[in-house]
Amino acid sequence: MAVECRMMDMSAVLLAFFSAVSGGFANLFARRLVSVSQARNMLSFNFALMTGMLLPVTPWFFHLNLNLRGMVLLVMAISLDGLANYGYFRSFERMNAVTVSGLLAVSPMFALVFSPLFIYQGSVLGLGQILAVGLFTLGIIMIVTGFQDRSSPQDNTPVKEIVFPLGTALLFSISMFLVKDLFLENVLNPFTYYLIRAGVISVISWTITKPDLRWVNWSTFFITAVRLMFVIGQWLFLLSALKNGHPALVKAVADLSPVIVALFSWSLLKEKPSLLQLGGVAVILAGGIVLALFSV
Image (tube, rainbow, N blue to C red; front, top):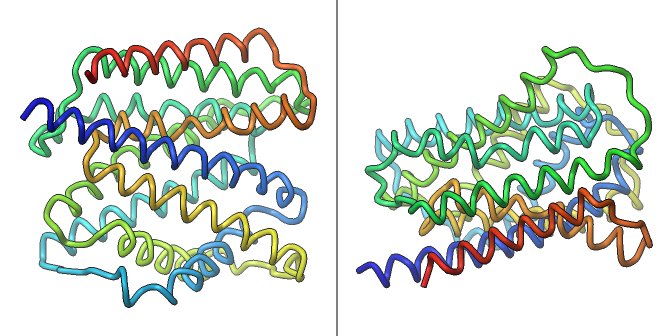
């Protein structure tokens, strides 16, 4: 049984790693879009386009076995997810990207704090895995902070604004436990949750933000669609990993996407890594070694 649990954990880690790679490429394409329009004008359009991209394969992957408890969990998970997305985009509009990314990176630590409340899900981390989560999180914060030297100067942000990225990290963490409940009870599968999530958030955000879509043309549409292919892959890998893995460990590995951005910047853009970033890579590698040692 222990060997089977370890194998399930490692398969979840592998899927979470694929999520990180997909997320890294999605972030690279996002660099091309950030100057086009405000995030509030992109949010609902992005989720609407994602829904449209998923619909053609729905007959093959859709699975929904809803009951009252499942309905409550689904509503709670999507509500928290929607609020987290609002906080996510609001954070990037009010604060510089480096600060926001660093604060969002603490999400796995929130998951560790809340994990005792969901111990009934049957996925418990050992001390070595907890240490690996901490190292992954610290390494990402170091890499993200290392971009600060090359970022444009920003005005001082009021301390109260920090509540939004931290709140986003907290809400994402809690929602992952609720989604895992949905998977464990066979209410739906990762594809179905993501499809429903995308459609609901699109409709609600469209109603609230009333976006200005003048930024959409053939060029931006193409770039957005390509980016969303990686975003869809990122989330489907993440949700699939969540079925068999602990939310804190899955989130910590999936959040390694800034490493992909950093490697791209260092290799293709010829940006010189800072000592802090190199230290972050070393810390992440140490986390990987710890995880491997405690998973055999």
